[in-house]
Image 1 (cartoon, rainbow, N blue to C red):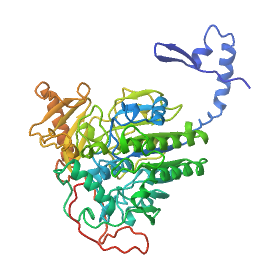
Image 2 (cartoon, rainbow, N blue to C red; image 1 turned 90 degrees about the vertical axis):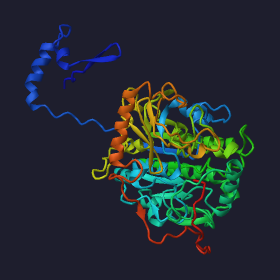
Image 3 (cartoon, rainbow, N blue to C red; image 1 turned 180 degrees about the vertical axis):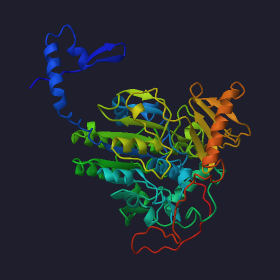
Length: 540
């Protein structure tokens, strides 16, 4: 049987020029051209259909999420204090994403990542507490739920924080299994006392920023013991000393899952408790860093990243797995030496300054993502859902509006691609800023969140301000007067979002949360507990 003609490629500058088969067949340099042309003309009516091209194997996905890690807390983003050799290697082998956004605090950030939406759209703009009557609605099309029909095994490990009632747990949102704490590690009675003491010492005037009493759970007073949950059952009550072991236990669960599911596609969501206060580095790391307990725990998180990546290499899954490392929000600056740093960024956790929600992020997939590069294009955690789903061969839901977009053009090397014309900065339900390209418009009344006590000058401004983040990443110089056209364009973008989710109140695009009538705390069987006070607390 005659060989098929091949396409020929010639390089011209940075482009490839394709010479079609006809050009090859009729080239004067090909003495077989007449015979082959005649043969093809005779056989063409009877030609067999071309064999289908094999589809790219469905990749595995791993998200490693730190808690309260600052933009400047790891080596690839400039840290000189914290040793992070595994993240350093991950960045050398992967892609640094330098304009990757989350949300200002814990619950909204996790809602954004797993739902593909702004937290306000799914009615989770505030932090949830134990025995909360609301949580992530089971009608939401979460990332693991959408991956399941594509044959993915799914596991959530670590901090959940999207509702602690049975219908809000990870196993009701597409995860096959779950192991971890259902909320922050300072939300048990002993942990709350330690965290409040730290807060009172560092910031005695730190204001409460939570919603009405009772609507977000047991926000202060007598809280239930901190529960460790496997699937839908509390298996242990976690004491402060036992928190020292959580990072290692999370890593063990992650490694076991990878090895068990090496023969099928999987999604691993590893959401660390670290480095949220109170600080609990493991015994092997305590006292070993040059940055106190905080640095100790950052370095343990780095070690856990190394365990995951090494396991993927050992199982020969590294070239089949997309791994993304990021944080849920910026550093909790009011905690002083028990908190991280935002590097060149202004502000921290709880604020809509860049330091509050621009996260140190690395994407890693050897052979698919360019090694040792960086990308400053605007991206957000809600983009992971459409990106992963498309790579898995799935389809986005038709009946649910999402805010995310496919990042693969950017991740695969098309650095000039633009996936978002705008990104909106919500603090709770309040819209405080918008970014488009390098321009960021901050609205009057934009607060400093949890950076207020650390940086006394961070008081709400009565004026609208415009920043060029390419030239002024620290948001120090208002250029609104010099760029009135830019100002008007961004004001139109704000009006569009006001018509969708609302600037202050709930707009028509907001969907309801899940809700239970009589919420109960998660308790180890046989543990007595009486529901206590539900007054506002100052620690998100």
